[in-house]
Length: 202
Image (cartoon, helix red, strand yellow):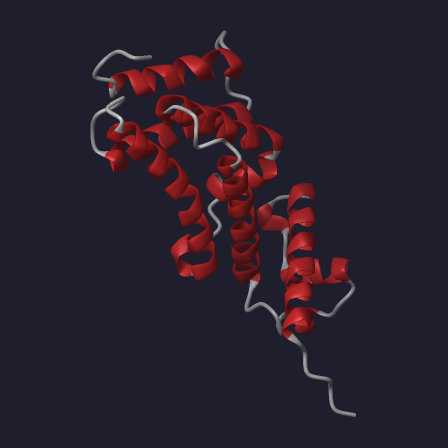
């Protein structure tokens, strides 16, 4: 009897389950230890069957990273955009740091572990762009309001780089010089915004 053709729902459900299993294995071990064969074994299917849905391990983690980028974007979009521009930027920084703190495995997969270039996978690139747009739009809003001055792209990158650096140090347990994350984070964010603040509003 010929094999019944897979529906779009069948394909999506398997790909989602396979990615979830890959993420579970990654959290138990590390990215390098996860293999297509290992994921398939945990799923209870053959490796050859898995290759019907994914070209390779990179493709699995590309879809997984897209899901996690959207999860981060959801967390950032939960911050009310009706807040005053500088308060909105600060709250976005807090939400970003909270996501990293609450989901360290997800954060490492997005920004610490070199898995692949997002632009090589359109779905991942689109999800990453969504998270980036939230911060960039908030930065432009603060510039348009006159609260900060400068190039919006450079300022947004600066904010992200500073926050990412502090978050990465915390996740690596390297904040051991006498000041912890909770002490450093508000001071750091305030100083970043002051650099670009023409009216000393902060």
